Length: 324
Image 1 (cartoon, rainbow, N blue to C red):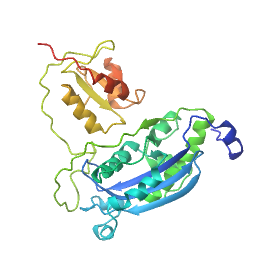
Image 2 (image 1 turned 30 degrees about the vertical axis):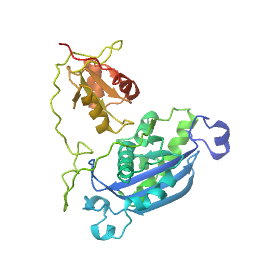
Image 3 (image 1 turned 90 degrees about the vertical axis):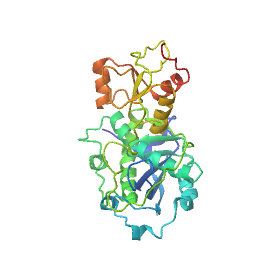
Image 4 (image 1 turned 180 degrees about the vertical axis):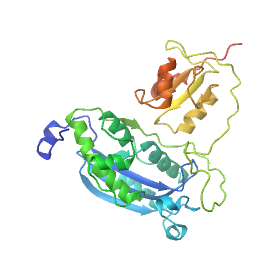
């Protein structure tokens, strides 16, 4: 794969590409909706992916630091760190006017958006780019989509995995050749809209010591049992008709709207949120229909209709009442 050099960059660079990027990594107390950021790093890059500067801070989460065995940040280390509202303005200045770039960007964006919502503010981010999605667009021959695999592919050496500053550095160094490869082939960048979180209610939390139940595989928020949908399943969605109450809707992959809010709006419309895809699923919502996730593969095998998030949010505005 040939990569553009600095002499040809300006002449051949796609005009539609963003003018600047903020490569971000955050370490957190866990993966749930009520978890907090304990450290954050930002590498600012210019339009061609060259590093302009970098910034790093610890953040006092005002609670148990969670998986210390992963991020290495103990309560003693974080005790004197600033609170998030105290670093919010500087963080925002680093993000302002740039595309947020992260590895598994939905997670980093949701954590950042929630912190700003708690602080009764909003991050000045309009779009994000996930480097996992970009690697897929470029068909990079990676054994998996871990950051270490992306780094190894481009010869970038990791020094301290799960340290926000080093992870952001590694990602910035791997993003630049990825960006140049995309520019050379005029590949569409997988940009997604970032909508600030405005519907936030802090859940009551109890002091937690040691390992946290929220830090587990399978989700980024505590499991929440929803009441059963009161309407019968009317069958599959048809493209020329509206959604109907009782339809079973499944979600897969990254979404612009916080997933929990999108699911809440689905339930409020009288639809059923399905955790998996089966022959009874009415519709799959995904922004990456060509991905090889279990849900998209099952949707293809069952012939389940698929729409993207933008189309789905339009459909939610006019859901037909259930029969009878």
